[in-house]
Image 1 (cartoon, rainbow, N blue to C red):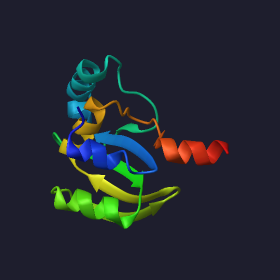
Image 2 (cartoon, rainbow, N blue to C red; image 1 turned 90 degrees about the vertical axis):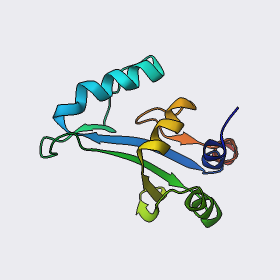
Image 3 (cartoon, helix red, strand yellow; image 1 turned 180 degrees about the vertical axis):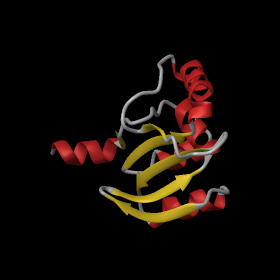
Image 4 (cartoon, rainbow, N blue to C red; image 1 turned 60 degrees about the horizontal axis):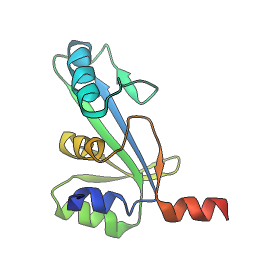
Amino acid sequence: MLDCTAQEMKRATTVLVQVKVAPSIKEEFSQKYTEATGARPQGEAFICEKRRDGRKANYEVWFAADETVAKNLAMLGYSVQPFLRGEFTHMVDDERLFWKLVRNGYRIGQVRQAPAAMEMATA
């Protein structure tokens, strides 16, 4: 059963999960992600930044949704930033949200579209 955060994210029309890690935690992160998904992280949305210090990482969730979804996520304790990046309208940099989405089938670098958005795109 999906928790309320994952249910709310299903209302977004488009979702992308991305992570930026320091070299010192790249392998640790890769191992944790592989344990959660059965696959190693890869692609352009898995970013190892050499200028990042220590054990730092950014767990970014980009999504396109109306303000209701953004407000509901904020009420659940997430810091939702309005952000225009291509098709995305909001971004949350939060490790908890990132891992909740990964546990609910989202994968680094895969742009997921809601069923309604996919139906409209094929009509």
